[in-house]
Length: 351
Ligand code: KG4
Ligand code: ZN
Image: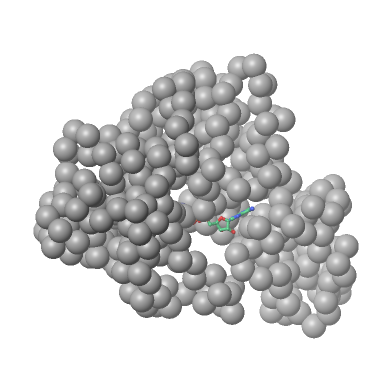
């Protein structure tokens, strides 16, 4: 079963070919980071224009890299949401056009299910049958922070999510406050490396609440106030713009990054472990862009009693289309296709 995946939910134009739900034959991602960097975040209008330019060459490259022709493809899978509607539309309408023109069935995929299913993907054969259910999946990205209870592939229950900013979004905003660039996650991870994680005691938002939700907006604001306090000790709450006049010294930036990262990851790891205990799961899965962070990976490894849990960390963390093709596989096997004529993007799509 050869599935062509297409993903354009945010600022990556991506296409991939995946065989039998796990074997990645090609994985092409056209990044728009350079276009959005001057704004410190994704500008929807710029994103959709870039998707229009990139989508056909990216799909052509995905077929070429996989050494396949369009006739070899069995089905087309495309992200239908959640995401930026003006970005989603480009992928969805391209997939619909190809479905019609090539006479291939189409499957609309939930982006979060894509992140979850990214755990199945490998360049080589994978021991997929060894995944023990039930499982808890923590998906942490720029748009989502979600704990999902999985009883099987395709059986998902959202047990917790962010009530304001996503974790990756907080990383991006803190990097902007510190004037470090975009996307913030990998940059903060680098700066934090030489920092002291105990230098600043940032809040661990809603850690004590008896639920599995998250909140990162207050943590981001706490960093902003700390920066203002350093730059303007007399009047810390008067905002001077993100960079301010006085530059922070390097050590302070490193310490802020390390302390912020520690606060965010302590909340993620603690709530994930609590969920794992409550639902008596065997497996913990980590996916989404923030899953690329080595400190988060180590945090989870250290927090979880190794003997009790199987910890699986995706190799395909940031947005890609292989995860979309992987997620569509089971439905494709059952021929549970969508109608190309009616398929639409949905920015707030839920499970
Ligand atoms: O999954 P993704 O590519 O897109 C969404 O679905 O949102 O995730 C992008 C997010 C960005 O916020 C980025 O800053 C964050 O993932 N990210 C990281 C790291 N790499 C990417 N956050 C922390 N540490 C990283 N190494
Ligand atoms: Zn994503």
